[in-house]
Structure formats: C-alpha cells, structure tokens
Length: 427
Ligand code: RM4
Ligand code: MN
Ligand code: MN
Image: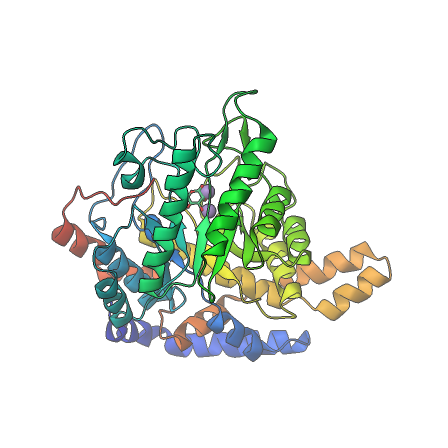
C-alpha cells in the first residue's frame, strides 16, 4: 500500500518551494485577468476513472512482455488503483470489464474497494471474445458478431451478458454500462449494413428497457479493428443514431483513439454535445489508429482544444460526464503510465482553464483569427505545473507522483508478493 503518511513525508521537502511557485503562478495569472484559486479548485475537483484492464501490461498481436507483479484478480487490481489514487488523488473510481473481471463475491469486492477509498465506475461488457456465456453452449459464438449477429442465439447470449453485467454493476454500486461492440465486417458483402445496424439498435433498446432507473448506458464508436472492412458503430454519427434509437438514457462515449487519422475530434465533441448525447470520454492518444498511447503524449494541442469544447459545454467547468483513461501499456510500468496520463489530463484541463473565453469570443466576433490564436497560445504556453501540484496536494496526493511512486518501491513489493510472471487479464 502507498499510505497518506508516506506521501506526506515524501512531499515535505518540496512544500516551501511549491508555495513560492504557486504564489508566482497566481500573480502571473492575476495579471492576465485569471483566478488561479478557481483553477486549482476545478483541477482538484475533477476525477478520472482508471480501467481495470490498464493496470496490467497490454499485448500486441506480436507478443506480450509482462512487467512482473501484475494483479492476479480484481481485488489486486483494486489495490493498484488505490495506490494510483493515493499518489494522484484524482483516480477515485475503477471501471471493470466483464468477464475479464468476474468477481464471485461482488459485495465483498465493493466493501474492499470502499475501504480503500474507491467506487466502481461504468461497467464494460465484453462480447468481442467468446466467454462463459457463449462457450457453455457449443453452438454459440461471437465470431460473426454479438448484438448484430444474424444468429439469434448469439444475439440472445450478448443481450443476456449485458444484463448480467448490469446486475453485477448494481451490486458493486456502479451507475452505468458501456457497450463497445466489435461487430462489423472483414469482407465486403459479408453482411447487410442495414441489417447489422438494425439488429444492434434493437439489442441496445432491449438492454435500455431493463436499465435500472438511475443508470446511464453508453455507446462507443470505433472505425475499425477487429473488423477491418467496417464496424457497425463506426463513427459519431452512427453512435448518435444508435443512442437515439436506444432511448433517453443512452449517451455517446468518445474514445480519443477511435477516429481515423486527422479527424477533427474537438469538432466531433462539439457536435455530439449539441445533440445532447455526449456521455463521456476514454482518454488516450493515437498516431495511426486505436493505439491506446498515453493521453497528451502525441497531440497535446488537440487535447487542449478538446478540453476547451468541454469547458464550453460545462459553462467554464468540466461537465458532469463519465471520464476514464483507456490505454494499453506494452513498454511502461502500467502504473507509471497511469500517473503520467492523469497528470497530462489535469495539466491540459488547467491550460484550457487559462483561456480567456471573453477575449476569444470578441476575437471571433471581430473576424480576427490572429487575435483568437493569441488568446489560445497565451493560455497554452502558461506554466500551470504548480497549480496542478497544488491541486494534487489538496487531495492529499503527491507533489510529484511519478518520483514518489518510484521511491515507494511499490512494483518491487508486488513482484515479491504476486510473482515475476503474473499476467493480468486484458488485451
Ligand atoms: C476497445 C474500446 C473499449 C475497451 C476495449 C478494451 O477498443 O476502447 O472501450 O473496452 O477496447
Ligand atoms: Mn475505449
Ligand atoms: Mn480502444
């Protein structure tokens, strides 16, 4: 465990320097007409969930190199997210993926998480692999799709799996279901576009019909992979159509890696928000496809523009949506990556909060793109690191969570406890 006492001790030597840096940042921002205290408040308030599948290393189709000490079950995944949250103070929920996570004692797991200060975020239903709900009946497979399959048995198994995931989620205290489907085609002519979309809409509606009253459900689009010719829910337009066909409480989730190269994702966010169906985010970064790289590591300015759209939706604060990191780590220690991802998210939020919206609007109304660019760049180039560190400190996290993590010896302790070759469930 990484205890608050360890973090306090680790922070101690850096406190007075941070105080100076925050005071300096406050005066710089004040000079620009910005309220640093309000920015710190908003960073400290904003939480981002950790996915249970990101605390283990991911594989590519070429291989997998486990880091050692990977969690062997969902309880151990909770331990890792609790360690992460102790360092950042911002990862207060964990999102499970079923059946990669299939706790036999949900109430026990819930209590275990609560004792460690964590709650359960959106539940993810996995119907992209055959799993116990299909293999028990040898004739059923998701090979040709789940909710969109022409085979009624496969559709029924997928529906039942989603309902079982909701049931499990209720016992864990979750309030949402995320449905990402692998349904699609690898070969032109393999299936009917209309038929697949109609069947998926139908299945989602049946899930929605049985959704608990205080729950939301999310559709998540993705243009390709594992279906390489077409995906049923391929883009934000299809996602909105599906959400509308599904019901009131179905919203769209935007995974930043689920867009073709050069897509204007900030515009996608704006459009989906205008339909009233924006439900949440999966944060990651991408160069080519669904690369699941560290958020903000490749296109930081794009991330900044996305946050700007979100702040517009929320009237200057982050709107109340489901925010999660969805990354896969083939090389880094997964916890180190999640620390860096959380920091990048908080840092970018701080930068977006530094935009003088009034000045931007004036520049837009004067048809003055150069002045608009000045407004954006002045914000983007602000040194907000002390504000982020101060926000973390308020949540009793570490001023510098990365070095604190390394100093804690957490990974070595877990290798000792869980073994050098444990492999967590996931991709
Ligand atoms: C998918 C998608 C989903 C996630 C799986 C593991 O590409 O991003 O959100 O549940 O990967
Ligand atoms: Mn995702
Ligand atoms: Mn993905």
